[in-house]
Image (cartoon, rainbow over all chains, first blue to last red; front, side):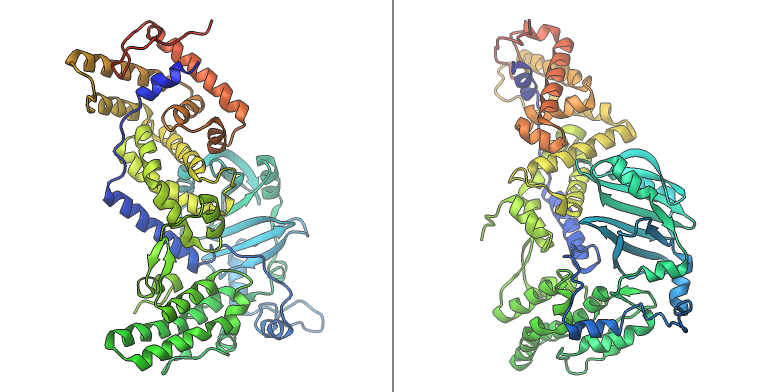
Length: 345
Length: 203
């Protein structure tokens, strides 16, 4: 019965395996991917905890997007910058009131992404301009199984699936944008049905559907000040050095920017002090970072994702002189800039 | 300190601590590279094996811990990438042709004489030719069993197909191989140069 198998086994071509250079390049590419995942929205998040402590909830309420200025119960008035984004972007919602937007990471006129969720199912949606549709599709089709086409939001999408999984992807052109929807489904028909339920809505409807975690551009300065509360700042630290943008951004992302910029500044000082043999400055930086487990913004973010834990891991390694897990153990100095997304000096 | 956690445990942790995925890479990159080398040649393996781990990392939260090892899952991703490459640019026959050439120029192993080496090389080429005649889905199954020594259950996981489908594809692959190698059942010299009773044909 197994004779053909044995025959084939005997004919198995020799394989040398990867050269050390190839293995190292592949590992470096993977590590870059991992570093990117740590500091961007692609970081896996835990479920958003909607019910926060009253103080936190109050602080968040002061900075959320939904400060629609109602005028005697009339139409909400949105900030001009936000309306510009909304007018340009594909304003897509799932045609089922039970699907909610649970995540809307920083998005601008050129790029945005959000997650819809319903009963444990999720659909990620992202859109980007400045991209050739054909190139985008070709790249995605080169890595995924091609399932043909399907209707999506008044267009026709290329339907793909991650090989060996129940995770589907649809890509279509929407005006000047390339839109990608991605989610798991029991079968392709189920995913097609979800895809077909995406429809474009008006600006008010779309903005009103945003989660309360989205920070309005005009509110960023106030939000940054609020997030800095309870964080010891390095001598000479200027809050204006925290990068801001005119993009709408998720509170989690802004929090990572704020806490990360401060932590990067402390670790920069720590690295310099160690090199210079300045024990007092080393101790000061270690002590400051040791307080990071109680930084309010990190505690708030810890309900959503892993950025705080990465930062706390670095703080612990500074204290003990230990290493940080990064596939292989790495020192704080080797890994902190990539781990935290520190601004390049 | 050596990491003792299973792949399943590491991948579960990697959803929150992405760095753990580096351990999975270190464990399996060379194995996946060698598999792809056999299927698409050395250059293609350099490119695709890296892509396998990029996709695996992207899908790390989708890993289903049917087995403690991530290898079947990684084999599945690698198989799909290899298949896409073949379909995409018709390199299939070229890749197999290259493999045949590499096999012919490989080390002679324990063969004693030039005639035996020549016969073994020709036999290997014929077997690889026959393999190329199989439907892709059937070839994937038999290659994973014969070359990578996966169990039927692991092949089912790798290719995301039921166990019964693994068996039926394997049977079909074996039958087609027999059809393309009718005289192998009577030959005494096989690819390793050792005498063997030959392929037993089903009655």
